[in-house]
Length: 159
Image (tube, rainbow, N blue to C red; front, side, top):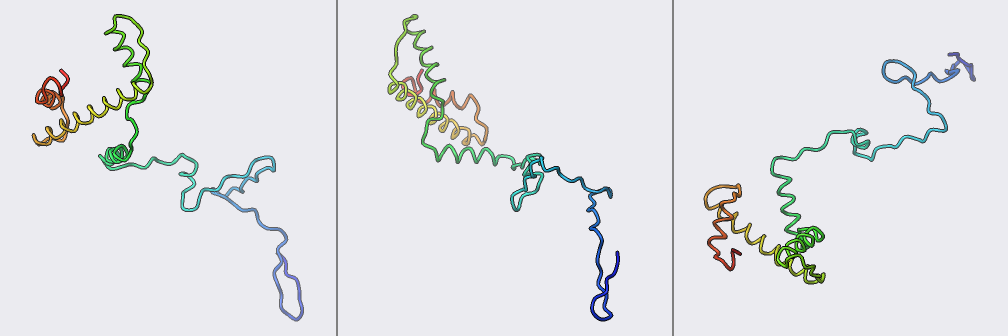
């Protein structure tokens, strides 16, 4: 570093070259070549680790994820069972009852059958869960479903 003389007796400092910036462990930082793409900056308010996707996953409290799914499915009005697997199951059951004769199904008929099946299952599970709550349990057991089907009878319990 040298000093240059300006007007009067005042001196000002002039540095020859800036010192290289040093990273951790006291070594100079490596310069990026012009061919390398620039590094992406994390969004404001996020840590660089989370932006790169290497951070820890956020943990939920026990039962919170289940409550989120319950709210999600209660808000939705769509079908819960995927259409193609349901159609395959209907066709396979139909083959058993028609002794190997192929029956063609219209899409509207499959949709009506799927809607009716989902309504039946949801009502059955809701009643069975109430039965579990009456017996002071939160866990739904097969005996709750069997009790509800027995109480409904042949027609409503389907067999």
